[in-house]
Image (tube, rainbow, N blue to C red; front, side):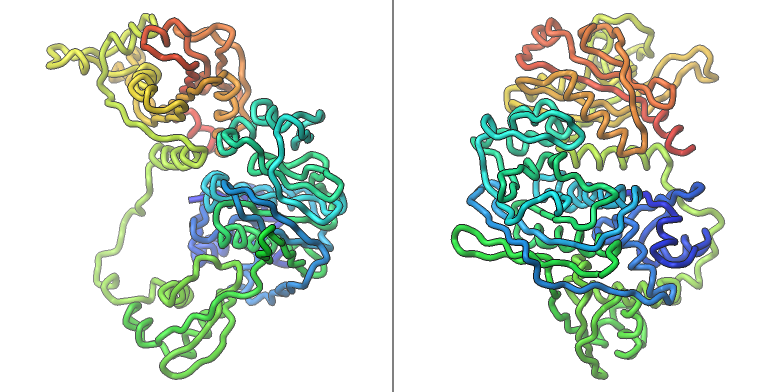
Length: 556
């Protein structure tokens, strides 16, 4: 599930009151959020993946207000004078736009907007393949806005965080986001962009926005866009972004933007209303094991800001808020009734069970393994699984290293005669087995290695590691560094890279990975002579990181 970090002081400012730790644990549980850590001014929690409206502090504060008895101002959607026009882009046909004005943005507000944008694009947007999102300073843009495909060798832009303009094709290889997401569009003859009426490029879709219209603390109005492969999803994404950002607006107005397509089709965002859902009181009570009346249920749904259309003794009709894209049927409504009523009150079976003496909790190693797995899958990697047993030839001979390892005294097979001491050799073998089928491979493995350690009581040290393998026609150390940076930053670490010599890797193209003053692993290009010996034609980049060291820093 997505992990969200907010400042408690920012949350308290949006709420207009402070919350103690006990209150935070109690009320976030009501929103199906699990607190990971409260440290000084920082609150870190896991939000349910079906509640992207809770991926930032704005949505969290809005959701908490009914539970705390704090009036919510709401927002108004009005027609905007901004217009959009969309050309034909078959691979990514849909675009939606919206405007939010009268903003007061702090540095933390900018961080939350970026966090929301990235979390939605990574989860709901399937690592930008399905949806990508952009936010721009509207005062630096000249509407109308155009969504079109352009020649990547003729059109230039200055990418976000860069100081020089570059051709769009170069953006894919010269920027970190280009390396991470360039595979989505690099096969296209023309690249999709958003531009304004003066030809200014706002975004190379779905890769990176322009530095020219960057949102800053002084920004008063923003333009929001979402592009993707599904009309419903891009409208939902713009709706989520606009209804969260408007919590920072003094007026509370969202400007709806009409986008006209070449064929006359028109898309307007954000969504102004949701469908009405008819709910049977009998069905809900049967599902939950309760005897609630229709009015009881309607009153409970006020905690989730539902709009009530009608109420009778047997049924009621409600509309969820427009940002609740997870509510689709009466069962979803019943779940909100259950949460508001209190799961602890449902049923009597639990009352007859002996009390728990110890709370269940996932081991930190498994938790971080799952978290890293989610991040890498979101980046487009595929997971592989190798046996912890290997051979001396693979573990040592392939890369030409010398090391101790634990060997089985009487193995039944030479393939499984020893415990592996690193993941790299087996990853190379997986690449070898699949290189003929795929021109590009992004693979990862999370697994244990066993290292002889005379100082240990058992004379062995078990480490959980994550290994990455990146190979395509032009793969370089830059690719590996970009992916490692993205992974570790998602975990709250800021890595640095220093030159390192490792047997079997190119000396000038290999680096150690460090964070908080400690070495976590390495990233480098495999020696072409080794690739040739395994029949591999494309360059191969491998990274291997000790997960137990990451855990140590993340749990501090």
